Length: 275
Image (cartoon, rainbow, N blue to C red; front, top):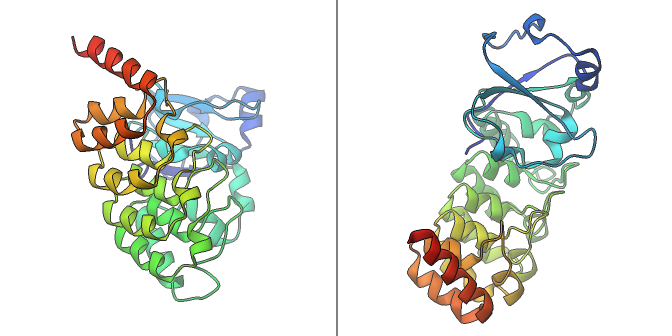
């Protein structure tokens, strides 16, 4: 799954109106894309307080229509790559400050914007309404060199924060396999933030094992507490993900800190799966 290839189109219509009036999307004019009538469309929003995992979106869906609130507060960087276009409602037009628009910039535009503003003292430590920084978006869009420049400039307090989903820049860097960035972040992050679990119970060490980032995992493990080590994600232990990715040295270090009952449970699950 990746975020960078998805394209945004801003539709001058509120998503609530789309639902209320059952808009015929064949009649919707989308100036920035070649609209294909046979493209499957999914309306996704949290108007009713729903929270879903975007990775479960059906592979036949190619156009996703959503609202600003959902795109701003859910884990939108995990939209599957088969989604070709993301259409957001008119609420985005209320965001006039370019800094608050970084979420919606493509990779090239974001790189240019950060490079133009990186030397301004009031910019690289500035916090967005979503509790994020330029560094967060640099990691989101896999801008390794830009992220490394920002890390050197930023105050540790700005680095040691999370967004409204509890997501840290370290989590993003590891998820996007930005090894050098992740290692530099670990040097500057507190134990509390390194052990921070997001709203989905996922932590930096979870991402390192899940994404097969062995070097990063080995650097993290001495600082990971037992609560995080023993936390299961999607009913699977940290040891399970390490074994699944053949991270032998990492698995050995995890076992040293893990509760015996979870170790035995993991061995049994892994054995059943592979036999």
